[in-house]
Image (cartoon, rainbow, N blue to C red):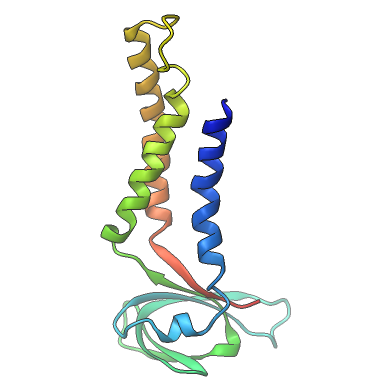
Length: 160
């Protein structure tokens, strides 16, 4: 693998993760989420031994400095969750917001899988180049689909 492709892979993975990491410990991100957004809240009860993490999925009703109010998915029950018990808070990202990252993942994967074989130089004929590009796409498309589904929820808050 050439150094340019290795650098492209590292940057494609590291830059989005570093950009997200800076703001995840601030409660201001939770307060900025508009009411009506689909959310996923991970809570823990400190009094319980061993600690168990519970997942609450629903629609955000409100968020203030001390708690969030969530309408539980699939019911009309509303739950107020104190900030101190929240371990992780995620918000749903619609497909249009994930599409750019998904396409970039796919393009990077195809480049990584087939980039060395399509450089020319006469050692590989055009039929073989197409074959390697197709192999790259066959490997990258499932990975891209998994990433598209895995990025449905974006972490907005993570307690230290």
